[in-house]
Image (cartoon, rainbow, N blue to C red; front, side, top):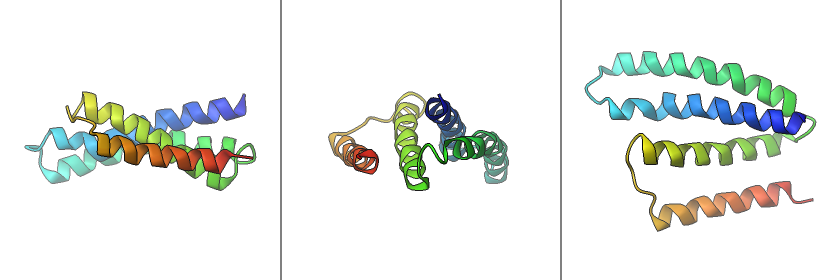
Length: 111
């Protein structure tokens, strides 16, 4: 159950992280200082979830596996966010790049 809970926390934390890092791109008229302040506010909640996820997951997963897992979750969340919120199109080139990163996850978790 701990591995699943770790993944759920990582997924939730990445939703906040992606919103903090890329959400302001849709609001270009917003002053930069306000975008930074809003991003910091969102990043707080990312850390509130990320730190417990890593604490809980460490031991079930190695630190290397936690990082690889976090990166692949970030990519999944980002693709959904960029497609829906930013209205960007995933190209074949980008999809192949992401697939190669997913291959790294398989390698990292292969026993």
